[in-house]
Image 1: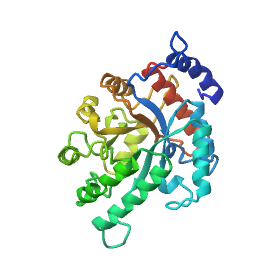
Image 2: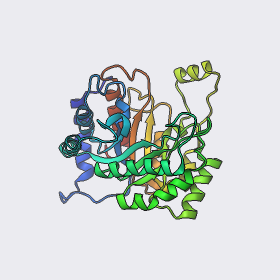
Image 3: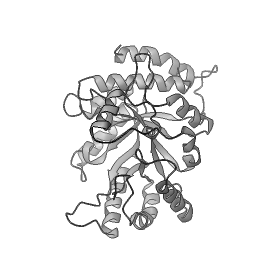
Image 4: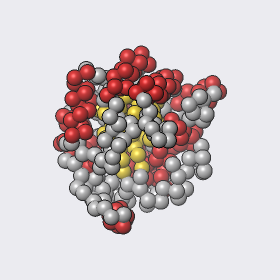
Length: 322
């Protein structure tokens, strides 16, 4: 069953109003629960083909998704030097559709130059360029993608040096730098231990933390995913236990709500969203879950939007908003 924008609003609007307004008619205070948003990456098959950036924002407004993530080099016209006109239009669109800039996706492109990695100084300068632009666009979290050196996504050896150099700038521009933790990285791994050790030793909170991608919890991959992995000579592994995120939550400033398949009855079939969201609520984590659709038919017009609406119906229910 496809769910149209009008149908979504009919399902969601009443519940959202009841959740937000108490018996006194006054908007309720924050309850310390996760908030919902969308990564524009989810529209990769349609953006600039059948949809504009404004169309995506209007779609988000229709599903009552407040927070937005953009990918700097893919979604900012003229990046890294957008025009004042583009920036002005960005803020006007955010205001029009009641969208909050949450996470700014960018890269420290360690292999920008053929034959050598960026120096620590070059990496730092690339970081600062993006922190400044993120600030101008109203973002307070950056998904700071670090260069990697192997298939398990181990970051470049000098990451500590240039991140440490950038900490005062992150504070100046009010942007939290967060590498993304996603499969095949495990939440219980040497890499995560290194991140946590750095955070605690250098006292980086809140200016350097983590983004956790819910794909790490996937435990029921689709048949198509299993076949594709097998054809590439790999094998599917079971996901991390949801409880493994708990000790990391003090350092997590945003999460990617990765999903690949919403059923007709509004359930994500590959990942235990009920357990994930219950855990976040229990531990009063109140950051943004940013939808990141990576399923089939992504290039079919309207398919991503339909899947996103279904996911937000599910998340509203699990958050007690529907």
